[in-house]
Length: 147
Image 1 (cartoon, rainbow, N blue to C red):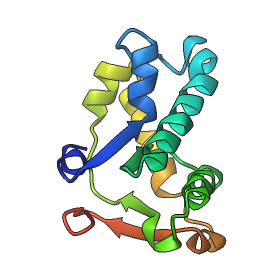
Image 2: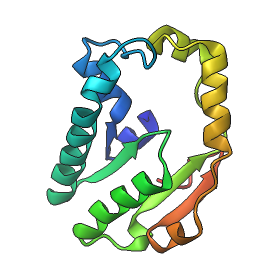
Image 3: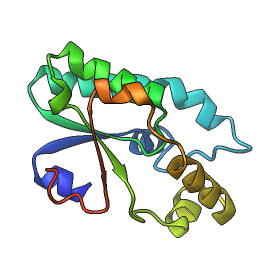
Image 4: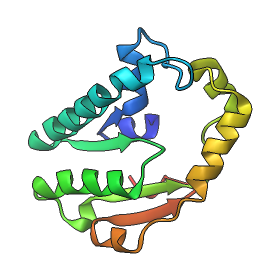
């Protein structure tokens, strides 16, 4: 995300908002109802933040690793509502190993096998056919040419 910030983008991260609402710690997803309790507020704050930045002509990135096609479409529609074209709304699917089980264990309290299962599920979830009507999709290990 440092690359994104250095290129003038604001970054809206659902994980960072979750941690902020939980005293700087990631609310564990299993065995703790905090995650479930704050989830509607997290996404409301994300949407409000993105709308604020777009309304004020700032460039913004939604950093959310585990998005479904429904959520990607939701964010694209927000962009469309601010007059952004398909070419201006971009989804980057990261093929690289940009995260680590160690960080997830330390920050989120998620076991290594849970982390690996989440990553496997994300990598095996294909983009739906109609998604290309909403935005450009990049699949990359190297983001240097995108920003």
